[in-house]
Figure 1: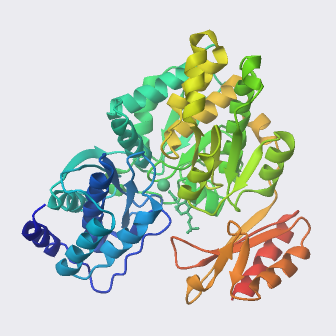
Figure 2: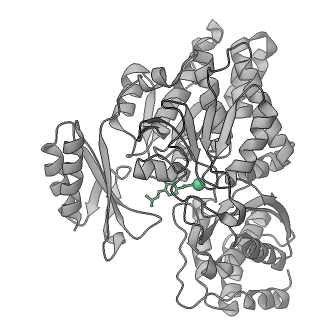
Figure 3: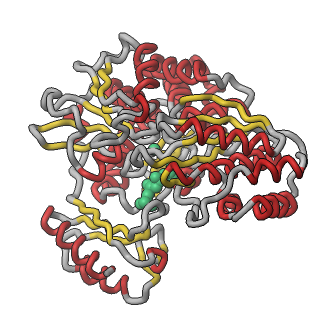
Length: 524
Ligand code: 16G
Ligand code: ZN
């Protein structure tokens, strides 16, 4: 690293004075026009993270389900997970630096504080379909290069694809995009071999994002094993991205996505978000939407895994492998009750944000985590995977679980591998959506957002289920909850928008609405 060159490069990427970037729940996000300096500095940061860990790191230019004018970055650890939380502080410091001198000062501080060795690292870069991608990927690459490290441009990918590739690369395993499709497709084929294809095909809302092209490759690879009709697949120049479609739209608006009013009533449909790391299923009843959200996917995944685990030889049942389902407070109470009472599995509650759920899921042999909004995956412990290899080809359940390990993205929630997970689970049970829906009935719920002058005045504890400040607010919420049949409610400051979010559920639609409104009034 040459200081003069570094400083010169930093001076090319000035932060707009008014812009105050902040690392939110999953990285930086803002209007694309102000982001060049932030993305450049994330390039610097991930090069330093590569030096610190002696491994390859990654960076994805995407703003997920946000409007097309926005963009952002998601930062990838050598394990394929999200950036180490301790480094979020450095991400913020670097992004906030005013000029080249400040930026270089933060870099020096970071080198010292973290005792980073000098040298040259490697950072893999990818982007989604937004028109601002080109400029911003160049900025990221310039940041990596300014540190004397090597940027590898991996091109257009879903966020989970890049997470997967970084993870595989560091494990010295095949890590090209081709290997990703191979792993998913062969895992699926092994998992469903000997089962009947589901009666009708799947119709997928691709949010006009990067998932469209990638899911097409996967579906072609699986044909005729999986019939999928893809819709909302435009995406050229970011056209129509997340506009009245996509997993986030469905989950928040509870409406059918654009282009789905003519699918046959009751047909099995799925929806991805703009960077294909979220997945929900749904079906149409007239103009109404019936949503199969992340909670319901988690329950189906738990059923699949637990059924196979039970088929393992008796010797494996003596000290059974642990299974845990990780949820946030947004999980519908009916799903939590089903998991605890019917599946008799452990439920762990964490704050919102994949990094929290992921960390909790790692504590189990099989950790299943999904946010209600559809982001999640299934993690398998190294000990379990090793045992499955020992049981080897003799054991059909061990083979099925190993197929799952290959098919389900072990780095991060992945809508593409999620589709295969749901399809495989349904096929192995011979189920349609009716049986899946019948497992439990969601309690009616309502979400509201309250605009406040400063969302940070609301602080929470107990995985966001209790308010600790402002004083007195929790008492008001408790009163409102007590008045609602089967009521439950909480508030939390959003990590991605300038609002306080309200969640309420209760025995009836009207009671849930009333409760949400009462809690929102208490926040005002
Ligand atoms: C981000 C998070 C998502 C979370 C959402 C909450 C990741 C990869 N994504 O999209 O998990 O549900 O933020 O947004 O962690 P909020 O804080 O605005 O409610
Ligand atoms: Zn996303």
